[in-house]
Length: 399
Image 1 (cartoon, rainbow, N blue to C red):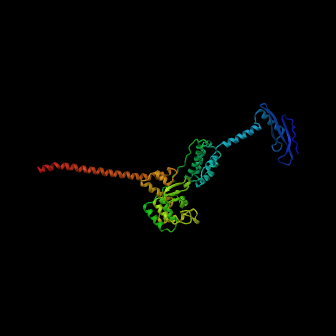
Image 2 (image 1 turned 30 degrees about the vertical axis):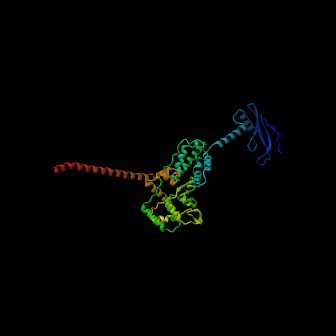
């Protein structure tokens, strides 16, 4: 067993003890210590091991001299510095840490799972270890420019919007400072508003009536009658339909809170005549489980109806539903937003021009009616003047 007795060296304040070697063939090695005074306090600390740290008496003496002169911190000061750094790291709200907090307060649904993929792939590698105030404007611009080569403008916008949401969340919670600059969003020009003429709708209903699939036609009708999204139709259960109060409950609509929309008469008649199975779903898939896809069958109906190739059979009919309401001029955009369960009015703005057209037609009608009134008044006044001119002559003839 190695001796733990202190043994002096030729260097003042440097000694060693024999200790079991950590690694190697040698059984023991020297562990060097130094002893000195600093600010009137006697300090004794380890300098290093003979083999593991390649320590010698001379090196230990050099370390001792640096500590006395204040050129290097003591072991205790170094430990305190490490603890302070660790505490500072724990207090830092990096993008990674903000993301975990943000994610933890969101329900587990398709929207947050999509955000997880976007964060892990595009944001974490570049910004995960940084605090918001440490993010350079140039780095965000580089990300935006780089995304042009790999994703669509809409996806790039979603990725940058996620970064913005994470930081804004931290600011609202008082966890971090805001970005010192505004994030420039990519311009998106792919907002597509699909519509069908009355002739196309007539052909579509004819194709639906001729189709034999039990789910495809009714789903297309429901999309047109209610404006429900494709995924909402897939998730629709009979328990979500309140025939008594006249409402349809939309559970987890595109990641938002549950919503309710009115059950109009056309949708009611369709659902009342729609065959029920043992499944809880209105439009069940295989074995009564939630449906995952129906593209093949609705596309067959679309082709038989002769609709445009780029028309989306289900989501396109949601647009038709919205377009009909907006172009009627009888529905304001706020009501339309609620019917479509849009979280932001910006999504509903795409239909504003249709409502403007309806208002323009109404204004033109008012102009026509006023014009007719003015014209009628002018005609009556003209007739009165003619009568006045002829009256004196008539008197002279009688005389």
